[in-house]
Length: 354
Image (cartoon, rainbow, N blue to C red; front, top):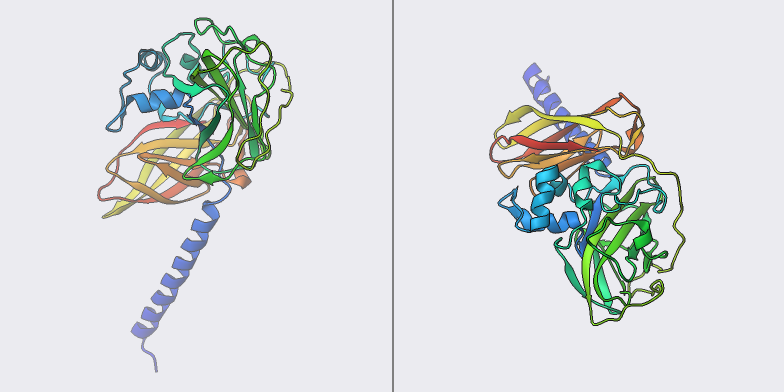
């Protein structure tokens, strides 16, 4: 006859096995279907270029004058969020949607400082007419594509960038999206035959969402001649097709819906912690594909999440909306939980949302 103590031990063992199985299921469920964020890393977008220019020991202290002024005007958070120049309502739209003078920020006020018309933004030197290996940093993959535009001959960087400054057609289109390798989309294509200072304007659009990303990469073309007409498209060596396409138009709208977020630890123990992240839509339109980001100290790592999808890059952790709760109505809130590990309980700072 089994004693109560033996039955108790067996029950505990069964409970532990079930808990481990459930934890595995939760980890699988919460690591899929994340929302995406990204920007050009080669040639570097303004936000990424200023981020790398200023990153020093986990802090951002820019050396470039344009980056310094952008931080003075808008703080460092836009650089920690260098991959977030997006419009949740973009739908791949460009002309007539993003206002003149706001192309580099995508009409998102958080990044308005990166619309500044000046000649000293960090610049990538490229060879005109050559095949270039583009690198577009990505948190996670998603279906969609990329369109790359370039400024017309005679572009003046001392004046606000307008759609009249841009060639009508993209010089490169990658659709469907290329595979992600080492955390980035990588695709090759022929650069236009330009000369001198220009902007390559990247548009990353989703086919499963209205979310669209925008960004300016300052480049200096060498070894080329100015061309009087729009740059021709060219097929890349990578697998995505490359074709020119007509940019859709729409009436101008305002920037992203507003939000507030809190992140806090709810429990700690030696080597680990549990936390909670909450976001509220404080705007007047739905907040689609929402996310919460924060910085962790002490080398801490988020290991799993529920009611959202977690990811991390260095000290910066993020939770994205799950597919079943992707949109928040005005005034609505959502809360996600997470577990993490580390040698000491971390502090939480630099909380942002979108």
